[in-house]
Length: 180
Image 1 (cartoon, one colour):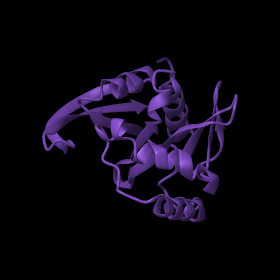
Image 2 (tube, helix red, strand yellow):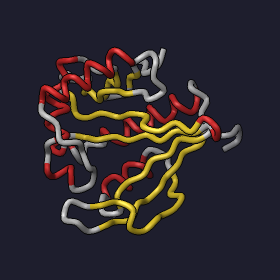
Image 3 (cartoon, helix red, strand yellow):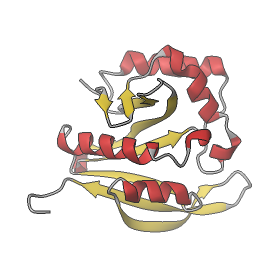
Image 4 (spheres, one colour):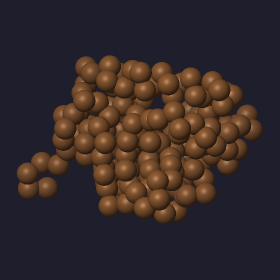
């Protein structure tokens, strides 16, 4: 089964439900987040259709997707997903977003660590990769906290809302060898 439910100390990482639309719509329409991530312009109804499609395709797609939910109260604080799979080289890219009002609580690092461990150990990827806009220093800290190492930087790769370009930082995590 793809996108299995995964529990951490404080979080439940689970498949999407139609009832998640309000929380996810809040993410994609939050201007504070769109400084770093370019979200598609969608209505709430269009986002619900996307979620319905993700639910329908959950067992057939390599692009696994999870909602990040707090176990203590069931609040959806974000999402995390496999957005690229490179079968030839046996690695994948993971992206995550946390609702802005929940930044600084360690939820992103906790979720990223759990999902990357699942992808390395259960799905047997050689490597899990993440990247972020160089301006998003919080995301860089998340990746390091989740056990990723910085691999590199490429200048002027992301178009910002204000028409300027920013560089992209690349991070990766590999399965630990015995003795590491």
